[in-house]
Length: 472
Image 1 (cartoon, rainbow, N blue to C red):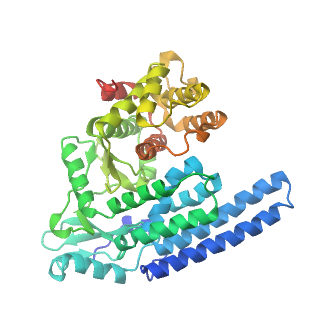
Image 2: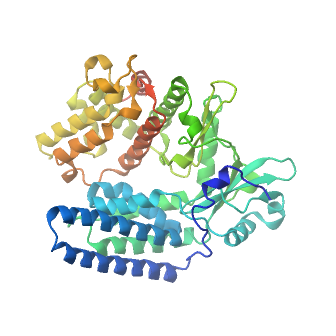
Image 3: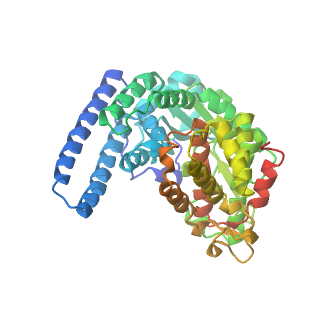
């Protein structure tokens, strides 16, 4: 049996494995219904108690209450696993635009890694998909490397040549439960009365259903993994695992094992500033190439999807890219329209921002002029790291002595949020197009990664090269 050394420690001692999965529709619906009624009764009781509290005490009580509710909801959905938990994660992306902050916090708490499923449920799934003879060719570690809502990954070794691989297996019954889970979750959201009156949530849940079916399609994920591997084959800054076809199927994806440590690891933080800058520059350039050049973006910025391979003998550190199940394609028409917004923000041309936003459907012609102006202002704030330092748009404390943007010290996300709130933009931009939701999810992840690396780099030239000839 293969032992995982450092990788196994990601899960050992943190979350107890699940002894069983609730995979039958009736069982899952009953659990969610009980959860809904339980949460509802607690909300009513909480509301009554709030009637007798002062304003400050009420705010503090609300924060404590919803924090406790978040843990209850996350733990129960973690027991259910599967599409309902993944749908909750995805709903948090849309929910930030129309749900109360407390509800978004509850859903966002589902982003964390979850408890693994016991090996006795994983082994039969592997044998069913690969066959007993093929499975005997591998030594598989029963302790998973990582566990998520739709499946988990195990390290293994091929006996014939010692090749180290990672076997990603989908939880039994996950794909079959998608439709039922989406219907139940939508009812739970409606029962909670958290959504604004008049908002039709059916299109949102239709989008969630489509996204879930894509995420359980391991053949599609295999194609995206192979596509990224081919596109980055000659770029020694990146490592993409190679698909091992003979151990893959529609519900199993096996790739080469690629070593690396988390970007949060102490060894990464200890790298010199130039080395962290190179990693940050590579990470930014990759995102810009994915969107503006390839039109194919891995939209899940979870830290677990990236590892850093430190060069012990030099300075050629590399970024290991993992998990392409959330890859989205963007049409050239959308990319050109989005480029209009970016170019307008960089060049102080609100007419370009408006042109691109109208094309995408992010804005409507009947929005008040003040909303158009506030939106343009927010866009110009967002592109702050890409502006010319000589323009004076960047707070001086966020620039180093060479003009590099100090990502780790930046409060840009907070300032963008404040701009939107101050101008009540959420009233008009209630539910943005799906492309915006997933693109900005990854964009936020880029910012977080560069902040984690404490990169101090100028990315203006990289962006200008990426959008050259676009946005007409």
